[in-house]
Image (tube, rainbow, N blue to C red; front, side):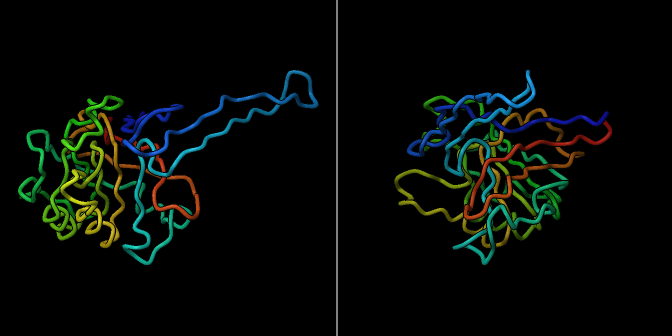
Length: 219
């Protein structure tokens, strides 16, 4: 049997993904009695923002004339040859991190190890690893088709940036989906796997949670 490796976080009631974002509200399933004894309908309710848990950011307005998850081609987020790039020794990830790597046509998953802080106060601080704008341009020029990271953002989110998101803008303008808040990338090989991060077909949003996973070849 092929080996599947889940690299996404659970979404739970009241959890924090990013400081300042609304927490998800999840109401437990309730069973409504059906016409047949012992059978019924189960239902629950979830209220959350699109940027919750592990999510994909779609190349949509204002970066590109494109729609949201409802019109996203599966080929852009599924069955992608993947590569894991180790960036655990740096805070500011520059273009040198990708020097000499064959990234064309690949989902580039950047392993920083920051996921070890998930659900702690440290995770949402401005100390998280991030890409430089030049690094993002390098990924585009190298032919990457998707970028993922196990950190809070591909960009520096410190107050000094005044809300600027240059790496995000470069990637989304070039049409590359971004998967944020990945985890457990140390369980993946550097190469030899395909990557999946498919959102539900929801219209009107530019980001939505995904169940991100890798299918290992020859496992």
